[in-house]
Length: 575
Image (tube, rainbow, N blue to C red; front, top):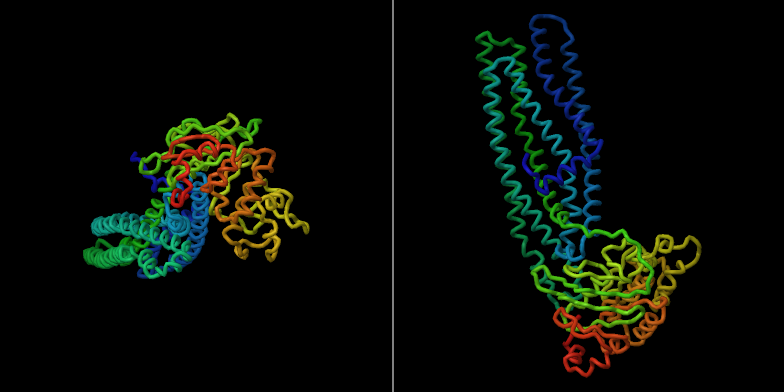
């Protein structure tokens, strides 16, 4: 048995995801195909009965078959629509769940707009696979049945129809091969344009300030000619295949009618059998109408290939161990991280952060500061070495235990949730994250975190306080940073701040630094910074240079080194 590729395996699963609706579609479509095959023979018997002058029930049977075809058409549309919707929803959930389970470095390989295109557009195309496969298989039954029926009526008629069907099959195979490449290319280029567009919209202020709107528009749409080329190629292939099948179909019917007419004059056929033969010839030539179903299947397979690509990346495995007792000692042992091009971002880093201490991480741009912060809280795993919290490797901890113990705050936080309360309580247990049902402004943990981050007064001035929708909250960069800090503050053992106070004024940063140092029951703090004042306030400074730990010492001791002082000089660090 040939090995199924990623897209084919995914398509098979999507077909199963249609569930009972796909089964119903198959049953209804098979019933319709059986009625369609029975109708010509029934009409032929009705004609022969009329020629003989016999009263019979064959005309009534033909009417019943026509009614059955109408009912099956309606039910097939209903079952196909519901099955595709169910399969699409499950596929989107699977892709989204997998993306969240993957290493953050994996997700960053794809532009956000491209992933949105796969999740929205390509998932909908791939979700049509069940309908396309069932209707495609069932569409083969009338032509095959027509060949059998014509062979039983007169073997020469069966041979004539079989020859024409073979020619149609060759034409449609060529269409599938060529159209697959065109549709795949179209979807790929469309994803690239979507990625550039979302990137440009995110930097709209920068583009406006630089007065480069026209240049950015040209950059976003640079691939438009290629997209147009793939689109035109797809339509040309479909038009060419339609024209060929449209030409072969009538010629095939004429050939069968000609052979049937000869057989009638030779006495091999009755008039009713000739009527049935003409009807079966039309059914067999209808194989060309399967082109639309094939086109849908081609789109579904190309879309499945686009979705299977991110699904092929392994998901990060969650641990099963609870967090043992401890005070928040962080240890990095031989940690190494490599970029996609093989360059070492971190190389053999050994670092111990004592429980309850504040360690500032400094270094020039590209030294690996943010990467160290990411592996310290298991935003992604290192390629070499291990990271331990209170003696337990982070990869062995359950997600709940890890997030309860470790909090992250970033220089450009993304606020997630419907309201401000949701954004602050994102990492809290559900009962604390949910807004209170009474008139209280916020749950106690959310309110405490907001006060520690010096953002409670900002939230109080919003139209609906903590219940204000994020979309309606006019926040400055510094206020958004403080909300990100509030989200991280409930962590029990380790607080990781990745340049998370860069947009704050000096007074607010000082108050937050005091809250970080004094609050939270002596949590360990790992602070990525580019400010000498922040490094001076830390217990220890981890100085990174070229992905290696150059020194771990108090700021005042390192300050005697001119290379260390150069890190804080203008242009010495670019975050």
